[in-house]
Length: 259
Image 1 (cartoon, rainbow, N blue to C red):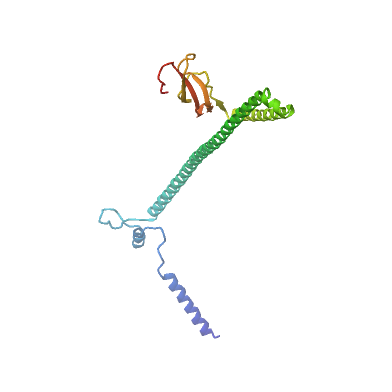
Image 2 (cartoon, rainbow, N blue to C red; image 1 turned 90 degrees about the vertical axis):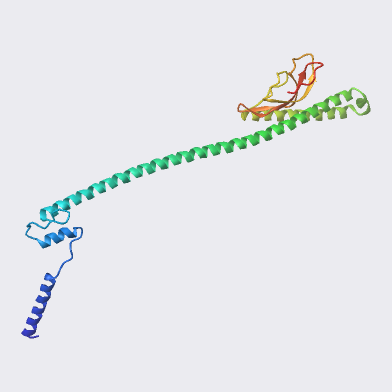
């Protein structure tokens, strides 16, 4: 490579460097275009023209710095306000979420309690129905036991052997005892369920807890007194679970009262 070639290359590179140094630059971002034009038009800081609104377009480095400082403070204030808003919204969101969780938990407890109440009510109805069946079975067994005891004193004892009659009586007695034990256990279970039998016989008729399905003239008790219970009634947790079906007394010679 010759000296002339090196010199020409150096000159070419210098020209490129001058061209790049003297070419126009893009205006800085974030600075108002009118302020930048004012600075470029009058870099010495002399008075600048006044626009149509009467505001001076004069702008120097101090004014530019003041504007940048004010913009920075405004950004800080906006950032602080946004942070406070974010904190407030987060607190409100947590509060609303807590209230929703409390409402949902209360609703869940209510639904669970209602479902439990329905289940206990169904079970209680089944237990009461079973007790009614055992009561009817016990009554039938006792009636059979009385019939056998009467028969043993007459022709049955003469026709059949004494051992056969005694065995029959013992079987019926054992059956009645089984009914009694079953009813005792059911009564304990009903007591655990907080179910109470409604006392009716000999008591004044209460239409809120009893249904009068029959009446009978009676000179003894006062009219409206319960003479007989056809179906036992029950109360559960202080409420009438099943009203009792009863027969009540009425005055002699009078027409049956509608109770």
